[in-house]
Image (cartoon, rainbow, N blue to C red; front, top):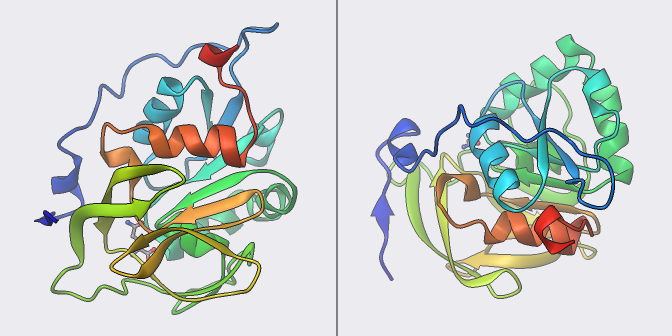
Length: 227
Ligand code: GLN
């Protein structure tokens, strides 16, 4: 198994695609792309948006409550969960986003997984509790706080690469939680109904299978190229 250290958050982003690429406008009728929101308060909007375009969706940056209108699913990206929780309060997004998470499909990655968890350590505000699990923030410690390796996620892809950046560690999962991805025998991808979360960053590789799996299998959406 090859294991590669990632020197820093920025260092892991060498494969960054063009972020200025225009996002296709919504078109009505059967060829319309499902509108998938990406929380855009802090953390990586652009790379998730590029991945969502590649899998046939229309990404929408969500930074105010009114942006949620007409959104069919959401991605909560990586970043800093404590900062995100503060910004959710100051923008007024917390309540509408929590309501969205209770009823609609959501994918959380890294800090996004922390927001969706039931229990997490050292945070200024409560998490959403959408997935019955306890997580330890920055759980891999200083020595290996960022690394890349192959993930065992048979329902998504056998050879998925996971980029872990100051990643949380899942310490407990409840009975109703399905573990769909493991790394070294530990859960790194979990799902409870319409809500899925992973401790790594799928947007930092060119591999779009995790986003495609979320859109089709978890959210039940039909992307543009499949119509
Ligand atoms: N360590 C961050 C946190 O606690 C998460 C890191 C990430 O999203 N890459 O929120």
